[in-house]
Length: 359
Ligand SMILES: *Cc1c(COP(=O)(O)O)cnc(C)c1O
Image 1 (spheres, rainbow, N blue to C red):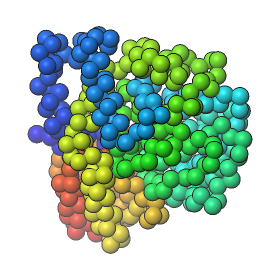
Image 2 (image 1 turned 90 degrees about the vertical axis):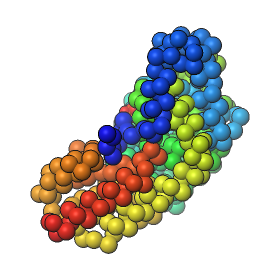
Image 3 (image 1 turned 60 degrees about the horizontal axis):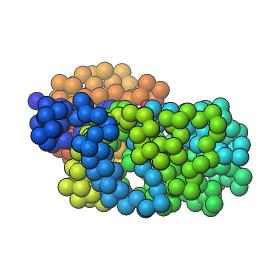
């Protein structure tokens, strides 16, 4: 029997996707092989990768002048490959610091260029998104980097920054496909798959084609976006099984009505949890209301000494992985696309019961 899994990542996947993968495990569509056993250059796998890309393009309405790359390395690795691929003849980039993942991007960026922190939410313990009026952008920057959903702090952009002619680069690891997005406003969108797409191992890069060809000579070929784009992400062996599962998730999302329908469900799920927390003193979320994440909801118990009992009771009630990130403590409920509303309702019932007993 399955549990409600609130892990921040690797995270819950749709049950139908897992069932389908199980059915197809030994023999994919009469090929007599598991997808794991296929050559990435064979017609079977090429059809899987092409369908995954086509469905992703449909889901996000990705314009034709954007390349979709299926790479390895995760978002952390891309933090290095972004400057390597985009600096060209420039030597500086702008970053907005909204929390733990922005900080990691900044740290990595500094190894390759001069980083200008155009705005930071550190003054209020990363509990908000600095409004655009406060950003000090540099017109000579090669790009502006943002993390549009801070997985640890639970802070999300609900607006798109304007960066003029300087390309906007967004780490969307933990909320991609949770909401409609106007891809044309971004130069690059990237993320690891293991939060809201599929299994670990797959990294998605969506890049506007005029930004290709600016890579520093030291850029590894397997992470050179232009070379990968010219080779349909098959310069090296791509993470084939992860691409296959991601493709099944894309099909599932289309069957749910696409990202616009998911967005409505995600708004409703997050509202249930925030509304409950806002009317009790027992639990609290530190994020400014207008910047709260729909995907990752950190919260604290009024009395921290009850944390262990809370987690233990949750586990007994078949709810797992609610412990907050080690850097912030407390609790965190990650409620990605694949978390059914029933999971959120079960969590709230448990929280109410726990409050009644200990409040
Ligand atoms: C998880 C996460 C990362 C790191 O991803 P890896 O695949 O572990 O490299 C980076 N950014 C955000 C926003 C994340 O949620």
